[in-house]
Length: 168
Image (cartoon, rainbow, N blue to C red; front, side):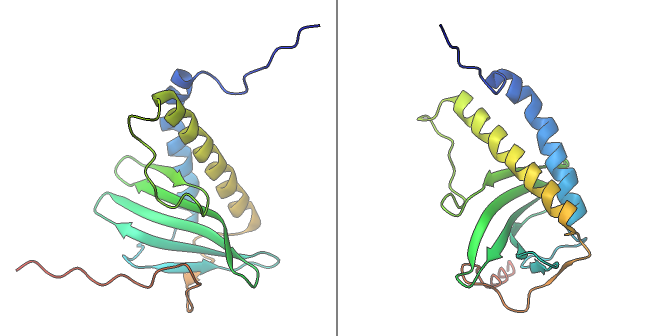
């Protein structure tokens, strides 16, 4: 008897064509969660009954992009899990996960040593996982209304960045 392995994902070129749609879906889900007018150094927390604290930190903000960190802080050891790093493209109305675990941080994984199809599949998996987590967070009751400024910033979060000096 011969067995065949079934590929669970479409070919990378099909995934590459579907990525913009996935990034738009992530943006829409994230847009329900994010409050209007995020500040440059915001660190917000959402607390709901029977759930860990959800922290959102603005790591960078520019005219057309914002780089966010979204994570649960769990238990006495205050583990960050999952730890999603998300780049939001406001003008294109898209958002993408750049990392989704504490080990990855914000490392760039593009370069000549990685084949293009590997990057497409990795991007697809990260953003599908992020979209499912965002849907879960919204179903649990997290929203822009539940995100409040964090009084105490958990370990592993940087304090508010220093303002950039004015050009003279």
